[in-house]
Amino acid sequence: MSINIALIIAGIVLTVFALVAGLTSKEEASGLSNPKVKISLGLIGILLIIYGGYSYGSLSTLALIEQASTGNVKDVQYPVTNVQIISPLEGDLVECRTMTKGVYPEPHDKDIWVLVKPSDGKFYPQSDHTNTSYKRDGEWQVITRFGGDKDEIFDIVVYEADSTASAYFSSTIEIWKSNLSYPGLESEELPDGITESDRINVSLKKNCRGIF
Image (cartoon, rainbow, N blue to C red):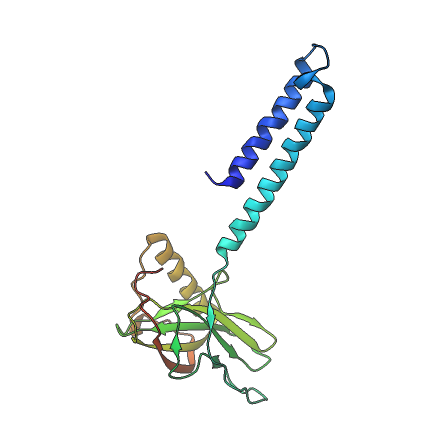
């Protein structure tokens, strides 16, 4: 049991005790039956519930936030004319979780997907909570997760996808998550409606196998 849940339980117990004691006690106002004591216990109980609930929610939210390393960044030539990767760079050594960043020309109405291609030759769509790469003000990013051996070479491939292809990648990820199995996509399994925009090679800085 976490300390946050323990605080919530203790707060409930104190609050219930204060309420019950206030309704049933007819003894002389001394000790725990003193109204001031009961009010204090009730207030402490309420504060424990609030604090425990708030901290539990905050910690739960923080647990969902992945920490990702940021690699070297390329100088951007403006105006941007195509979707491209600006970090990491070609040939970089990357961590197991690396933030892949890029830029895109505006206006731009396609979803941007990053697929990782390790030495097994399969493709692994990368996503955060929104599935597609996050886009705003001409920039995009997504946490890229690598699961191979030290020095293994990976392609990071960026695709622009229409709504149908984007839905296919999203549903594929959901199926993999529910099955707790990530078999990857063969090249012939990639959907229609995608266009490759950029591709770089990187290699792993350390062993990342089995950490996800």
